[in-house]
Length: 355
Ligand code: 5AD
Ligand code: FES
Image 1 (cartoon, rainbow, N blue to C red):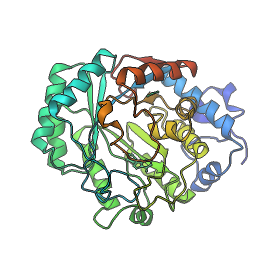
Image 2 (cartoon, rainbow, N blue to C red):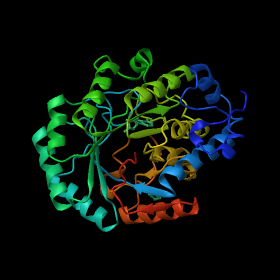
Image 3 (cartoon, rainbow, N blue to C red):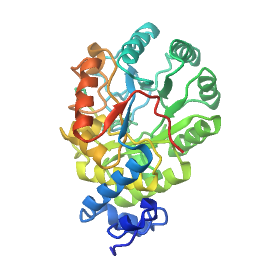
């Protein structure tokens, strides 16, 4: 690919070495070519880091992840907490247990709590709303993020009115056929997209994203994923490598690659300069240095675990997940060191998107 300037990295003297004229009007073919070669990687990562520094400086936001239920009514073929996994012991945290996680988190400097779980109808709209408003009443300076899958418009609306600020719902793949290969008949990409539109419509800061290297994924799917994100304009974009789970139908498939995930983080940073992009736990799980490399490739968020250690191993999305034996405080200290050694620093802030 011809070396051209990058309008996003707006300073003329910086443009000379960048591989693309602009990531905004790059064609599908150019994007595919860029994803399939490593020759641009160092320039991509440098450009992404420069864009990130211009908007977010060296700040890294922390989100306290509370994995409050591993019950799930869905049966996604890739996911370890799918309902078809009968060997996994299931747990639910009570509202009081969730609150205890928040207290610990707040004292450690967290100002965003992410309530993540499988699709578990035990947590009715009413119970969820009570949990949300309890957290917001105790910590009005904090953001509450939900990551509990697909629900009705009116449920989302109720959560928003109870005080939830943000919602994470990865689309997983923007290609219908590929979506079919990753999910059972009962789920559809159309429904997923509608949920995302509803969340935006209601006023949530929305996050979406996809797995990198999931079974049957082709470059053209990744291009579609990026195009879908451009349409959606999410505030947050979460991507991580697919990692096999031994008790799922995808037990024999290969893990996604570190390199491609990093390349995608950089491309996403260039295309979505303002987005909040986490260096995910999955990235840290396929490579001991994965999260640090993610930060250097343009990520600006990390999500340490605040769940009680007693349940950590049971929130088993994939094999060999890191941080399952560490207390919240240990994870925070560990990540703080990792972030600082990478040249950035963790800030005590809600870390809302800058516009
Ligand atoms: N490998 C990597 N990521 C996974 N997720 C679920 N299962 C796996 C897996 N086997 C991701 C999905 C989901 C998020 C919570 O975790 O993208 O949206
Ligand atoms: Fe959890 Fe390092 S972040 S132990």
